[in-house]
Amino acid sequence: MSAASTVPPMSAAGEIERYTFRERLMHWLTGLTYLYCLATGLAFYSPHLFWLADVLGGGPTSRFWHPIVGIAFLMCTLWMNSLWHRDMEITETDKRWLDRTENYAANRDDLVPPQERFNAGQKLFYWLMLYGALLLLLSGVFLWIPEYIPRQTAWVRGLMVLVHEIAALATIGGFLIHVYMGIFLVPGSMTAITTGYVSRAWARAHHRFWYMRVTGGGQREE
Amino acid sequence: MSNGPLQIKAISGHAGPVPGRDTSRDYDVCKLIDVTTCIGCKACEVACLEWNGYPFRETVFDNTYQTMPDLAWNYYNLIRFNEHVDEDGSLSWLMRKDQCMHCAEPGCLMACPADGAIVQYTNGIVDFHQENCIGCQYCVTGCPFNIPKFNSATKKIHKCTLCSDRVGAGLEPACIKACPTGCLHFGTKDDMKDLAGTRVKQLHEHTAHKNAGIYDPPGVGGTHVMYVLHDINHPERYGGLPKDPQIPWTVRMWKGPLKWIGDLAMAAGIVGLAAHYIRFGSKKIEEQPKEAPK
Image (tube, rainbow over all chains, first blue to last red; front, side, top):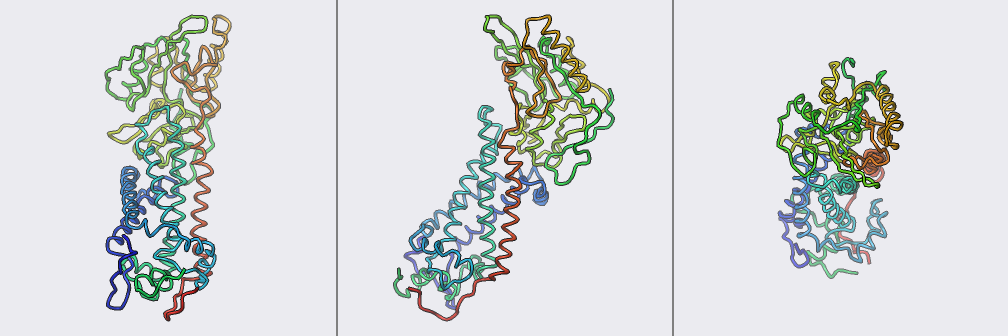
């Protein structure tokens, strides 16, 4: 979606629409498919977490669906890319934000440079998940149907297990931070991604450039 | 020989301790295959099918004396054939009975994520329990001998059991019983080593096979299936028997350091985020408009 040119609708209470229905649907489908792959993947990863596979219908069932839901996850991620890639490009504003990440992390938000629709942290998470999903699918194919991979290239399969595991761990790191921020750190963000609306104060505080653009509140100051 | 009931000493994908861990019986069982006396009759292949209840099947003719190109999920035992021409121009037909080697350090078991799908008994037999198999085929990646085979209909993996059901009842494996030349032997590992040593000495003294030797690869901790080969320096001539089989380093990495690094990182991540919340709390926003910072 090119949010750049459209002014989003506002609710009766003067709230601003942050995510359209399509974006919210896409987000939650991505989240759901990722969660399934995460739970079943962790079951295959560690004997101590194998109970996750039992909860989800048993080991064979989890093994059967993990790659298929994985493809669905990649599809959702590509859908996300088609909706958001323009909003996710790293800009000069982001570089200034990234120089002051410690201020953002310590909640000294007055010292954080104003941000566009997505801040640099969200953008990094986005690119991590996109490339992570691509890498997971690419390596996952080798784990999915090893019987079709000739014995001469068996070493590739071993390597792909490592790639799959490292890529998964990287996305888990991003995912943990994402869930923590959505649920605990930034009040209002959960409402935003479920109902689609945020208060004006929320938009002003967290995404000032975006707020000014969508409300016509003056030119963006660089 | 009697083994009594089979006791387990290693279990795949198992979270808790294993009762028989690090124990071993007074004797490990072992199959000895003296390839120098194998005539390639395939009686062992037939006996294996009969005992395990698998149907006979059409052979795949590929201009050799091999029944088919590779093992299959319902074909645990295959005589590999290779026509080898030596440097001096002499020709030899190399026959090798190929089946699971029952490694002391099994790569399949290390790679397997399913609790109880692969077990190792204290007598050395590595056995697959299909009811616990999830069909992921990681064991195929872990095995340096290319043994486990996938049944795509049932999504289960199968391989030679060393007739654990027979051995548990005090019988020898079916293939041993069928062998007409006495090239197959079964007993304790120590006894088989002695027997193999005697045969190798005989080959050194009475034949031209001066490089004859015992194949019991140390890279996988030794195996519970051993070969006497005419030329121990060239095991790969016998239908691709690996010279120095190892569990792939990728599998060792993945089941070793990466496992605890990953576990630790995930746990530390969760603890770290909780600590962050306790230290900094959630972000507050000002309800009153304020000038944008320049």
